Image 1 (tube, rainbow, N blue to C red):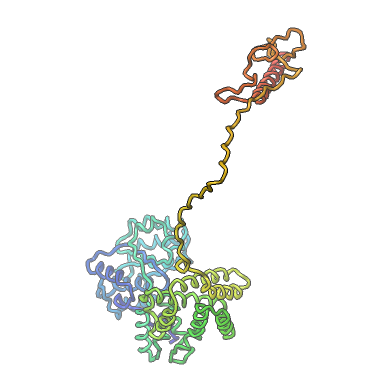
Image 2: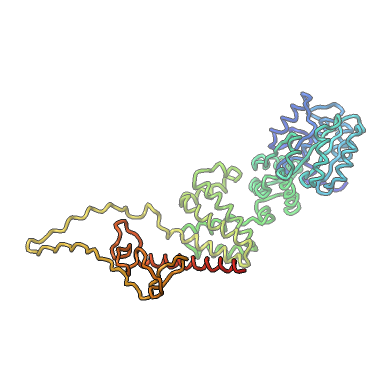
Length: 481
């Protein structure tokens, strides 16, 4: 028989073996016991947390020869076929390669026929969000009114891409990431069953590298067993997972927080000499500073996945600094790590960030600044008895605005609206004309209300006259045509 990887060999076969998904397994068990089984379920969550595995266990619970039962026997022919993936009534479909409307139409036609074994006919569609919009529309009718004893189980890592019309016809279950403590305990138990020795520190590194995905952790365990020869050590895990050694990270951060950029840069060069890439060093530094920030701020609950020796390193560093300094350094390094992904010189960005973080001790805090006291009111200046009295300010003169002289070419308005010069025959002085000798608005006195100056008034009147003349000329031209 060919070799089975741990991800398949250690796959849970019952609801009680599924890790960290009690809110789902308990609901499904109660639904089976009470006979309240839905016709469609949507399993959403990150990769490798048990979505397809739970769907297979549900299929075994419904089609077991002793069922429907929440505890399938696992030894009957139906359970064995479902475990092997050869049962004709349990069809697993890859949504990425069967995403068209033709495949969904074929599924819809086959679903109308009863199951071969007389039990439930179950369709498990993995990565259902990859279906096209037309394929989703073809599923609507059969999801709303499915044939009897037909069950659909949809699994997806991106539920936001599933149309709301599909989600509303399903019972949705959200799977969670598996906590590191439960995962490490599970890995230690299964490894002991295989005769594999694993150090707790190595398992902690595996769980952190998996990101909460049990399948990823099992794949890493397969690699470690082949790499270390059956005994998984912390050094072997660090070498395989390309995790930067804690001593290097501690030296970089400690020197930077102490204001020693030279020492921090020396440790950075040491990391590069050991073969670590800039990306690996950036990621390790950000994670190290995050753990140090939790220790410095008193939030050690987030350090529960670390061993006691690893947590002690962060406590020692935190005792010699403050959380504000760690926070500032974390921001600088995280920003440099983000920029380094698009830069052609990522090492320069990292080294510049280390130097900048080392100079944070030069910054002046607000508490260290001297307090500002309010200034006392100024005393009035004493006047000498023999000083001469200051002269009183002269009152402002109100200047009289002289009237602008009338130019020899002054004009008046004829009866037809065209302005007329005084030299022309028939000239008559109108009101306000200085040549008439009468009082005019512009006789040199400023109105009490503050009106226009004589210059402005003449300009305005000239513009109005010009507009009237142009308008009259245009009217005359139109009549002549």
